[in-house]
Image (cartoon, rainbow, N blue to C red; front, side):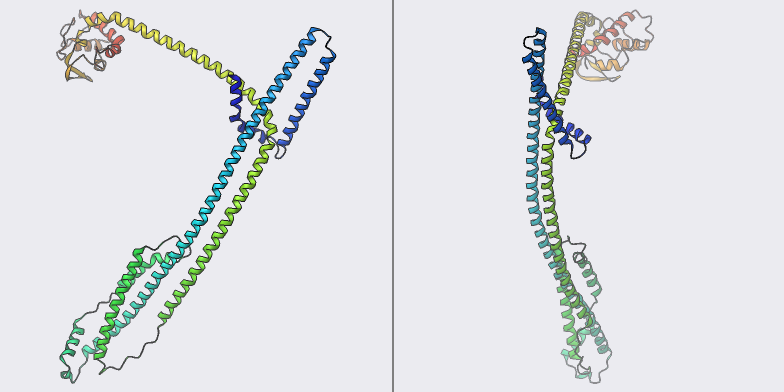
Length: 491
């Protein structure tokens, strides 16, 4: 059993020993120096064996004492060879462990390559998502710009319409009687219809809807997406604004047609500077989007190159680890022999301690069993006396102690041992003796009094029942738990 443990246990402790040895040697020389030292030891042992064998052959005719000494040296040589074999087996086991770890690292590198492929695919999808998000943002921005331009046109047309309506309302026409009924009805429609200016409300809503769009088109916020509801709401609002503008233009054209007889035709309006600025903003946003997509692609290529460089560096480190592992084999052989000796000593000490603990535990168990058996014998011997003396406690009744108070029990049961202790009836003082007699012969206990007199209070120091009270307290203190375990007292 000792040899089996010695062969199995050294492996888990080798990494720690290796760490200590490596920290004591200068970098780059520890493995070479250890290998040279080990080789020197082996050469010395071989030369010693050879010298001993030569001496044995020369001195074969000498005394029996020399023959005995030669046998001892031979046994030492065999012991040394056996230790070397064990050290070699330990080293081989360590090398196998290192090989398995290197295989695990190679599997991790393969997994890293797969993750790199997934990252590249994810980056491609991310670039596509960014492009779609920017395209949608540009679509929303185009709709908002058109709506804002429509709002500007609506304001100008509304001012023109209101001014023309005011001039028409205040104008005095000499030949007003010449207007037809249809013309008067049209004038009544314009004069009674109130066109509300809602451009401020529209502008505020457009500004709110443009907030996420501006965030997306900002270079430092590229991960935000435009909800479908935003595009729908902008489209509906732009359509509403356009419809209101179309209605206003229809009313303006109708009023202008009516007032052409006394109003000069309005010259054709040239393109405004606001129109030119809006077109410039759209072109600038498109150029910014192209630049952003190009930059994202360049950054992704740089990221891919960095990951590939990291993988190559990991491979180089893996090869270095393999070389260092092979260099450490020489020093580990000596460390394995030393570790084996330490483990054997530790194992022997632990086995001795375990046998001692086991013997002590058996002794404690035997003493406890003897004590329990003794207590059981004493309990059985005292049981007839307890049945005669403790009738008010062991008999069944409907009155039960709930703490220190009396309560009605659901069925007849013995008195509660916990309640007896809580009432102080087991204390050796005068108060405890009075409490004991109060439970045994008091008016609240519906069980038989037995040998105890009825008691309603007072000093019991001179009562004839005092010896019985003390004996009852002693029996309950000593065997109360056993009485509960055997069902003679309630818990």
